[in-house]
Image (cartoon, rainbow over all chains, first blue to last red; front, side, top):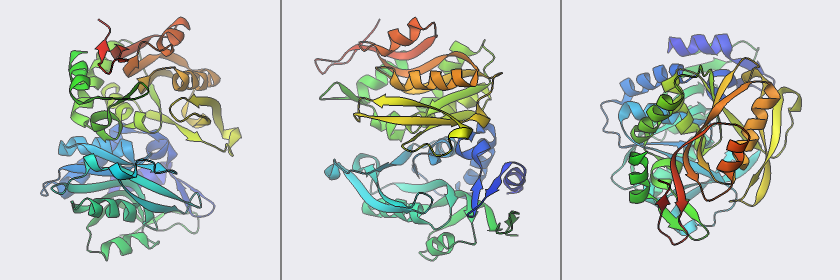
Length: 190
Length: 190
């Protein structure tokens, strides 16, 4: 999506260790009118599916997911990160490895909000190694719900996550796919 | 706001320890079309102020803040909760006490996203003891920006937070004010 690629080139900052900071419009400050344009694109891509729910993960996915959900006129559910699962009977839970923060954490979703008859679109801001996305897919499978696909704002296509999830037969639509930024310059897949 | 009070009575659950669960439409699952109606009400209340930015705190404030921000056509900034402030030069930071989780945590906002000429509306889902709200007010004051007021979805008016913040001369608009729920039944301030 050219609008997004242009914005990443304009406002994204590449930091040491292959980190792309998009703090000024996605991750810390959120340009909601811009996100609305991304949401319309996700809706265009998935509008023929009968999506009943958007699933995301706290914290930075929530804002985007809410704006996308409004396009589909369905609710958002966000998985919570936690260190102690103390309500295990009421929730679906799995483990996610964070490469940014170098730790493993549990994510949980209440069983009340994922059902067998749900058709779920996963929304997240980043896809790199695919650890969070794999976790969300597991939660949906525990619930016996249908995964329609994933809508990702920025995919680091030079990392393995996208290939991994697609090889599971799951549709992944990424609005910007970065093919490299190792030289400090951002290149997109054409 | 009657729409909200009715929804709280219908879907809110009172748990032991004076806890109101609104997980099914605000806090875990988010009914975005419903939140849009709340956002319009916040806009009606604050539309004569020249708000430049919405400030909230992760995680459950983010979705609501994004939908509200779209009404005002301004960006959202969300304060991040953290245990280790390792980029102290670039951020404003203060401490917040959590009574739910019985701990103290740091919140941070990048100095890039709060400016002296900003007129800021704080949005959050709950106001009880006012600890998070006080923290957000401090961050805004560190930046030298103007606090237009706070927009709260649910105020526990029997706790001290609302009185405390208003006694600081800050406008607080709460869409539902709970006067008591000690008997397991939710009563609103009339």
